[in-house]
Image (cartoon, rainbow, N blue to C red; front, top):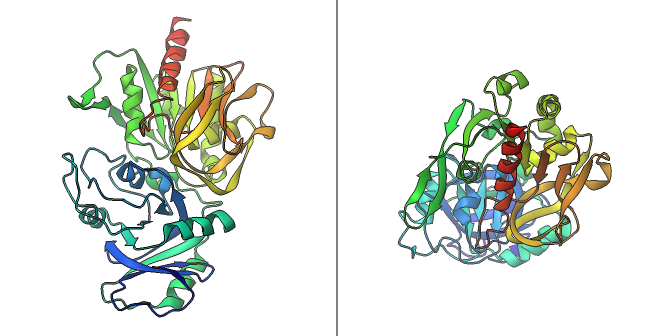
Length: 391
């Protein structure tokens, strides 16, 4: 439905509304769980992978607007989830969710969303909403779904304006594992599905700030036996596992807020000389641990077609991204150089230490929306570990 500032639904069949903190209303049709949910409204330009996106822990605290209109057309299944419980607050789509058309589907997206406690709204002019986000930055909003079509707009608006936003918010502890876990699952193949690690080359400790399962699979694919520890694990707890390398995962929220407890640990890990690899939030935390700075972006990068250039080789990779904070390249010390940049806006997408086997990237190399351009980064990490062990 069209954007509105009036509190009265434009037609009697309306069952949901998106209320932005500036008072803008988008009327539509609800699905998933009834009720309301508040969060930062962002947009993702991916054509495929909506289930992986919705279960990515990095989306904690966010309502995802999908710019591709046909969301739900391949249904949902138990294999394409990135975590056990979605951290996203809700989703906004253009078209009504249709019956799934895929041999891999085991449920309708609407049923799956309800089982995952997600609130969705369809019938929205997502192009108009996306332009609004581009103009003003990611706003706070509330999705309300009521089958009776009755909404208390002033109350919903008050909830939207009262929500503090992601800046300064530590969400990693909310989505991190709370127990130590051993991981040996490998990547999916069309012939055999997911596999298991058979040839162990090294032991990697992964710090879980909101890790996607497919990252852990990609680590195992290189021959890494992975031990996953909580975001709040101490230096002593991590080193007690006798790691050959350290992995720092993706995750949600403001890296500076997570850094209050993560940075002292990371500084000690850096001083061990062990190989370290970070992705997304892990990348931002590494930059902070080296003395750099991060900042909140106006609208962030979220999609599956982001061009990133490897400055070392000149190669351009088509990548998946999901981040609302970025590393300030000018703040990095002399022994940390920029290895990758976004070709959209020249923001920092990768760093590497010149005197230690440490590197990180902003993009998600484990996500493969067709291209698998960045899978080499996992092999690069394993090569560092093998070289370190030999030394």
